[in-house]
Image (cartoon, rainbow, N blue to C red; front, side):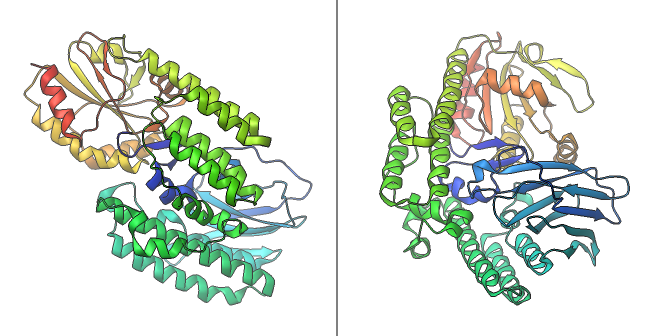
Length: 480
């Protein structure tokens, strides 16, 4: 596997082993909310125009089964949300573009009213209705312990690891100070343990970030070892915060590399030995399938692994088979994009809205393509390296560099281009065009780099990164 690769998930991201742990809390899959007889949430935005928002609800603790429900905000600022809670209560996050990210505690059969407006320099929320004391706390918790507060996809905007550690410590103190606002002791104890577990996991994620930056193995880090020691992997709270998966994964001796088969099979054994919580087992079925069929390089004996994996999946056999079938499509894409085959075409859009065909743009020069998105941290980190390549080969008329964004949010793409002012052609694809492009090239994660020969045939469908020395050498050799 060529370094870190981000898997596309509705604008959120998941990464390889070290980074899987780092950003697991922000991995979401789209789902349809089921309506119920009682409206659970009514809200109003005051002082801003918001077109729509997104509510995320974890019904069973398995983040692969999360519901993400879009809602519209009227011209009067009013919005509402409803779903079928699996228990008497449920916690959701409410995200509004340009406004912020909020937490709300919902109660079955009752309504919570939420008002979003400026509180000083920042946007805040107030609540009326059912168990508002818990909503007030959960909103503080959600904003303080949001993993995206401790990581930035843009290196130019990122803090140092030490700064993030200090920020986490400060925010965790605020969360603990807010706990007494919860009236019911049983509820207070639950959220206290939730905050402790989330703080521990965010600390671990920052340790992993630091180890990645220093090119060391987090498994050897003394603080990491202490934090995962004696973790109850079957505790529902640890499952919810990802501490359970982190602790279980830390026991695996196999590395995540190549087809990831050895790691996945070891995780299946560890699951059978140590996991009794159905929600964690369900999550592991999904996660192990992703690690092998999506993150792996596809070069192992996938038929033998699939047979073993599907049998192990038990009640989730159908889900396991669906993942395996997607992998068959991926392998077909890999076959179709082998060196020497004609490069699949796609309609590209320029920053000014002009439509162009990749076949026409690429023909005549050795073409190095960067497939990226503004929300993808590893993609953004490669941009300075790509910029250096562009500068180095600016007088070589046999090579060209193209960047193709898959951003659904074109405004974010334009904003990034205005900030960076890249000196090489920029294009964007989204919607059905992006889906077809990704299917043609077998792209399940970004950044992805492609090399096309001057005659329009493929040199590499999964090329080395700008940051790798081999990339420059390849370009030199192919443009002599």
